[in-house]
Amino acid sequence: MKIIHAKEFDRYQEVPEVPREDDTVVVVVDINAAIKAEGDAALRRYAARFDRSSPEKLETPKGAGEEAWGRMQKEKPELAAALRLAADHIRRFAELQKAQFTDFEYEMSPGLFTGQRHIPIQRAGIYAPGGHFPLISSVLMGAIPAAVAGVDEIVLASPPLEDGLPDRRILAAAYLAGVERTFAVGGAQAVAAFAFGTETLPRVDIIAGPGNRYVATAKRLLFGQTGIDFVAGPTDVLIITDGKSSFPGMKSADIAAVDMLAQAEHDHDARARVLVPNRTIAERITAAIEKRLAHLATAQTARASLEAGGLIIIYHTMEEAVCIANAIAPEHLELHVEHTENWIPHLTNYGSLFTGILSTEALGDYSAGINHTLPTAGTARFTGGLSVRHFFKTVTSLRCAPGAGFEEARLAAAVIARAEGLEAHAASAESRG
Image (tube, rainbow, N blue to C red; front, side, top):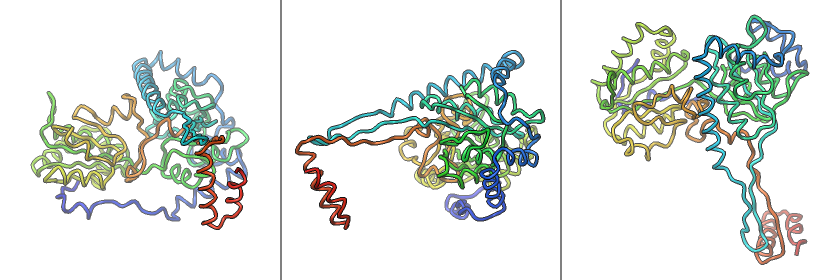
């Protein structure tokens, strides 16, 4: 892991590449074409190639989710209780978000009434990865905001295990979140099936949820055929520390180290970076990381991630640190400093901000209520994370009645249309006189 000074940062800043026609794109294009042409038959063929099994029945039996939830409550009550708590927080936060989106009609001027409505989409598809780290929490993060938004039908796809059904923990979470139907389908083929519809899987209006590079590529290529939350790249965290924040039992360097490792253990492409005020703190963090790696079950992955992209950046002023943070535009930004109120107004580019040394990203990932599906690869410069807003459309309306305001707008429209050379537009406005 590299230690650099702020003035060297530009050399190490990763600029996201423009997607190119690499092997991933070629594979996904073929999958998309096959699913569109062959439907369920292609899904089974790709399942046999990529998944642990190729189930004859792609839709899980009715009651499978309820059964999985009941079994979890008996066999893993601690996990069931944790998921119930997380679901409650996610739902309450989504309800607070929804309350910020109001419908209205406003009389712009006499006779000219403008309006806005928020209309839920009809069907949402949630994708939940399986594999070594089945993302149980992503089921809650996707399905609950959709339910709060008022989506008519929520369906979910997740890869099949050897018995032909998705991971039972994912099924249990789906039941808890209110998912109506679940399908044992994984990978890019699940995205294509939701985008086009097959004999078994319904076509959806939006697909939300994380996945590997094939899933991300499928979402990017199929945007327009269906809606998507956004295309996610490798996960990342940036921590800003002044070396002063701590709480009993842990020093600031160890806290920064454990949070970097929490990010790095995702996969080799995950990025963990920290801004520190001097080299002494930088060296304490590297020592703390090495000490923890010696006992970490995911050490191989975490070490590969840190060697590939881990970075400790030494800053000299708050302004310098803020400038670098805004340039990185991290998915997760942790602020381990005194007087956070002096920093926050200047930090503008991040997916989620975790303020204070107690506010670990892990709580945002699982149980605090904020959504963990966030913009990556610097896209926090222009977008935020998954929320209820992804599951409804903001539409506008116009209602006119005789009045001075209507007359002014009508005549102005005719003048502008004629200036653009669109004579029929001008005539349409003038005909209302």
